[in-house]
Image (cartoon, rainbow, N blue to C red; front, side, top):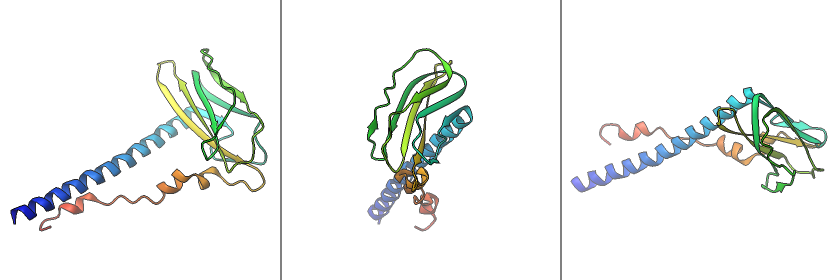
Length: 165
């Protein structure tokens, strides 16, 4: 009887650890979104995140409330194909950054990833997505990671330790 009880307890502990890791991942993703939300009040982009445009933009713009150094700016398709936008780091700080784009081919959407260093040397990352064309849909409707997050269900681990089980 003791061996069975030990096995049941071991299984429950293992399950709790797995559920804790799942919840920790969900919390970390929520914190990432909170940080992104924090940045959206501090940073503005053109096109705005999740924009659906009639035609391809000719440039990307980032605007910040304070002087920052733009250390990264990349553009990708949904398949993570890199678009060469000829970004080069400029050590001079600024509040407004405009970057010309090459002619963009049709894709479901594009995602721009950026990173800045604030005056307090804090590294901040962000991203925004946009789509364009007559049949374009909002990127949030098409992004696999956002679609997957809608269907994640985290079980309540507290029910595992009810008396008598």
